[in-house]
Amino acid sequence: MHEDEIKNPANEPEVSNDSVADDVEIEEFEFNDGEEDLRATLKKLRKDLKDVKTEKQEYLTNWQRERADFVNYKKDEEARRKDYIRIANERMGMEFLPILDSYDMAFANKDAWEKVDKNWRTGVEYIHQQLLKALADHGITEIEIKEGDTFNPELHQPMSMTSTDDATKDHTIERVVQKGYTMSGKVLRPARVTVYEHKS
Image (cartoon, rainbow, N blue to C red; front, side):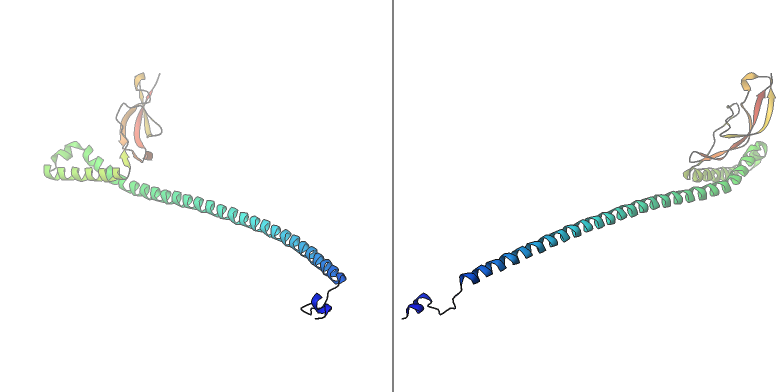
């Protein structure tokens, strides 16, 4: 065996030290170039992440705004619905008040009312009580008032003033001309009354 074959048993081409040095320089150059690409990629990823976060915040803000608008819309719709029901009930109540007035006028003429057949009279009074209960179930109730009560402009509508020498009767109810009614605490129709006025 030749001495050259022992030194290079695989018969591989010999590489000079100069070639190895060149390969190292190339590898270092490629590594450096890859590092710059990595930095650029990292910078781009950071920018993309920042953009995504900004976009996410915009979506979140818009969603919260839309949700708040929808909640407000539902509240407004509920308020409108309640107003519609209230107005409808008020109209219904106002249409029933003349019927109640007719009952009151019939009952007020005691002499004529007592002459009516007792069974028929009892039936009419029962129907009247049913009507009052049905209206009360819808929040419509009579304003409690009697002669001698203090005049209240929020509940009473003065039809006329009656002079009196009695100072204790000043601004008190002389007579109830027409009953008044409230609906759920709100005056549906004030009671029409005559009022005493003290003349000094």
